[in-house]
Amino acid sequence: MKVLIVGGVAGGATAAARLRRLDEHATITILERGEHISYANCGLPYHLGGKIANRRRLFVLAPADFRRRFAVEVRTGHEVVAIHRGDRELEVRDLDTGRTYREAYDRVLLAPGAVPIRPRGMEGSRVFAFRSVADLDRLQSFLADERPASALIAGGGFLGLEMAENLIARGLSVTLVEMAPQVLPGLDADMAWPLHEHLRARGVTLELGFAVAALEESGESVRATLADGRRVEAGLVVLALGVRPEGELARKAGLTLGPTGGIAVDRHLRTSDPDIFAVGDAIEVEHRVSGRKVLLPLAGPANRQARVAAANIAGRTEEYSGSAGTAIVKVFDLAAGFTGLGRQQLERAGIDHRSVIIHSTSHAPYYPGAEALTLKLQFSPAGEILGAQAVGSEGVDKRIDVIATAIQLGGRVGDLAGLDLSYAPPFGHARDPVNVAGLMGRNILAGDLDVVDAADLMARPDRQVVDVSEPAEFAAGHVPGAVNIPLGELRSRLGELDPDQEVVSVCAVGQRSYNACRILRQHGFRKVRNLNGGYRTYRGLAKPAG
Image 1 (cartoon, rainbow, N blue to C red):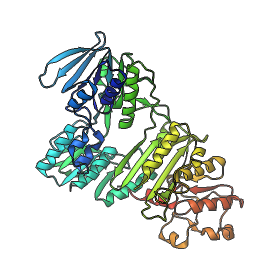
Image 2 (image 1 turned 120 degrees about the vertical axis):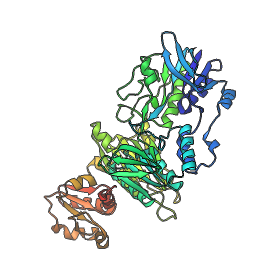
Image 3 (image 1 turned 60 degrees about the vertical axis):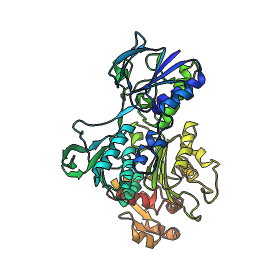
Image 4 (image 1 turned 135 degrees about the vertical axis):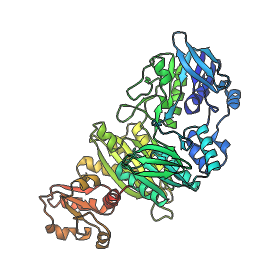
């Protein structure tokens, strides 16, 4: 069997290695238009900033080493320009010589990846995309030769945030422009505000809610015109506007593309041609929570897809069951992670949901070094776990991975409450934030608790709000219009509240106000709701993001 693999890195190289382990006699060839086939794409920003000092550590295996270890022919600098399905041949261009030739196949694996989104007119010697080793080298050379003092980053997703941190580390002043009203649009707004505070504290200027409309190079700077007409000048611009699947080769070959623009595949990673498979950033996959086809340009899913595709090419039967989109990003000293779907995604998908927000710490607060941790859990009225988000300095990955595992195994909210998680004061809590989120979710489903989100309270502030914090806390900040009745005085001051009106109970993080809700309900108050995440979330969401 002769297998041709189009593209390397997470998809192609992983598939080639596993296919060789499964079939010692197959003829396997990787055709890669770039110089490298196996490198840590996700580590590129950290080499730029100096965190990964040794460039060689980014490369898993050089082409020659890959050939020796796996007996796979590797042709770098060879671009596949067409698939002739009738003849079962690929048309390949040798980029060094310009020669074009055809290569026969029995099976093809497409792993062409994705390409950075670059709107028309956003080119120039001071405008950079950042996706490959070649992009890294170009930017490194520019920084060394030109020594710019400032940078503008267009886009506040994963790459934009990583580039902000690492360009600050290089000594540049950084302005980050994001068309959404927040960074990391995959997060809910009530979870993104800690990132805004942290970015500003680290010297990043945020311009949120405005897209870059145009770029104009002039001498030693680039002038960016924002959508509202304002102009920002910088020594260079990094485009971090996301990526689109590289599906042109598949489209020209008549393979089916899905509604997302990604290559359509079945659960075996076969395309509409049974002899052609596809993996990685170029394909669309099924989201585990919504069941919808989505694009998830992430290294983890690409690696798993590559193993499944290789097994099926080798004659086994394996299925790729989709992804929950689990991801995490480092933002200076914070981390932000999520799995499943957030509020905006659930609303767009028309999925009924509930949520709880927990403010806790990375481990027991009495043990030194505990850092603030915020966790949000989304779930259905039937108890299905729909998603989770977390932000903090430590412990974000642990909590998100636990909930991602629960999603994959079909766990429910009540299961989170009962998880037997490791505990010692330096590492966690006797009742972990994941357990607490599960307990709160279970209380909501049982009818013992109702919550209102901060954004909903802001949109309809004409409600009876009681803040059960202590007077000094209340004086330091509170929801406008709230009346202060400390929790310890609530039972004796019930007459100050109208039991026929809705009551929103508030405290710093939502724990004391939950106790207040239970008191009020059992004293005849018909509609009592707890402020989700407490005043800490309300205050953060109320602050201007830009």
